[in-house]
Image (tube, rainbow, N blue to C red):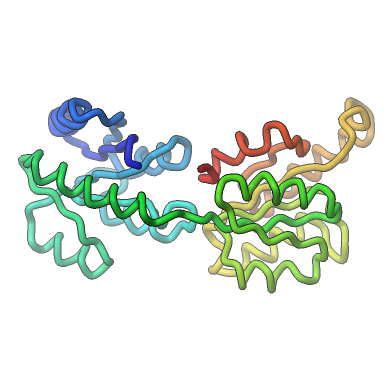
Length: 260
């Protein structure tokens, strides 16, 4: 169900007007003045629908739309393009856009489009695809159970030799890798090898650790772990989420679009 709407428009007066109209209809509205800020909000907050102008500084509506559709985690986000210009409509139509709204805003038209999208989103259940990698099958099973609670299709992999094949077959939104994996290749090497492929350029890669918290409070193991984290981030990992803890795991996954 659509509750959170992001309006991307460099015209503050237009954005505020649309925001007020939408808020009167009961929606929670966030405003971004360009595509870069809109993208940042989409990646860090819950957004159910994007309404975007075309002409904006730094990143326009075309580039924003393409960036969203090229990222597995945002490819299914509904988008309404605000424009009256036929040349823009033709350009977006070639990209697969079907929803447009004119300026100045026709609220009845816009409400009808939102309801149409809402009906489609409600019927279409989203299944996030996640590959989880690590040597401990017990941890992988706990992760699988948690992720399936929020409608994820989960593929566990505990053998490094199978990672490439499983990832290509699954095309996951998120890949989770135990940072201390050392079977044939290190986690750093696995990440680097995945990032070589254009196929995984925008895939979110998250590293986690499976260890006894008392073991790394201080000393050589802590220093070693910090170095491994640094190496993995340099190799292309998006984030290190720390030690796997079943109690807060799903909360951490919300940052990467994994939510009910």
